[in-house]
Length: 502
Image 1 (tube, rainbow, N blue to C red):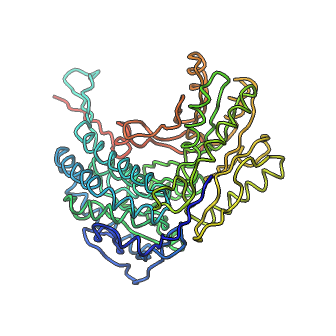
Image 2: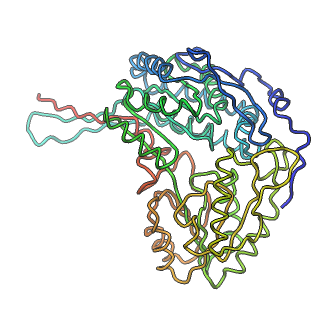
Image 3: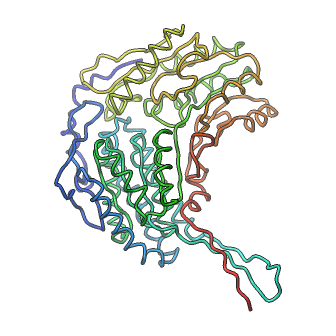
């Protein structure tokens, strides 16, 4: 692999290069107004590629969030009465503005998340696709007429918005994780209070600026920023405030369980997209070049910080060495550097704690007998970012930590297997089940394995499984509910039956 010099990347200089400087907002957005926290407290956001300060945003506490919830509750009274066509029109304007401002949004996203600029541009289009899709879906929320068992009566079924939704998003997709949730909620007729990750609040605030320009009414979309220290109290407010009727969260399984417990006090509707430990299986009849190429993206996109990235790679023993060679050759072609360097294909990790976790898993794996084929250390660069080399391990057994722990980083263990039955049993041992991938040209095996994998999403001969039209979500301890697709809007709707005696 190669390494960028990064001598020209200075965070504040790059921040100043935005075409539209008003997209870089340093205040929260509540009730259609840009505001500070009541205490005037702020917290610092850093560029993970340089560890330099990017900016400061309000450090809002539970009382600030309560005010945002009150604003959303007031707005819901009117927003729920709008027609689907009205909601579709404003969402389409928002999506169009996101596409128009793609380059600025991508630059903001890269500066706060470290993601390579090409990936960031792709995320902005991906994020806009959810706003466009759910705007269209708003007009397709249909009810039913059910034949009544009683003469002289009729049964109607309608769908209505649940109410105010509390939305908590992670740092790895600062734009798309918001639009996938918010698009569905607003299209359904709900209003929202969003708490973005404290590492990446600027993308959320830029989206608010564009939503404001698109004409989304005051109080319908509210975004509150909070530091790591205030996050527990903010989460408690969102899960226990009786005016909030729905909570949607993407993050770790332990935090998801805590939020579920807290939400039970008011019996809120929940959508939880939690941790994964995705297997990537290469059978002996697979196209090895295609599998190796797809694994590069599936494992190392966003420096391995995706909930659906390949966490465990299983390769049939008869093609193991050949596949490893093909894959490592592609890893060597990656270019590590700051995300704003156009040549970068592999950026930094977003947090130091994430980097330390990768180092810990690597250390334990080597102690268990694994061999580092490539990578395995922090590279020496001219910036002090959270960088770790893309790393491949062989001679891996089920005793390494990745067999039961999600990595969320650029560590790729490659296991051997012998039979189809064996590998399916091994990959299903974990408590989570978000995504899984396998490569095979045997049509019978395609159906057997796809149906046998205990996950919510399967990629067959592909490492890409997510789009606005496909349902996203997991099984087991990977959560509940679905996002995106025609099913995503139902997460924000109540079903009501009306029995009429004529």
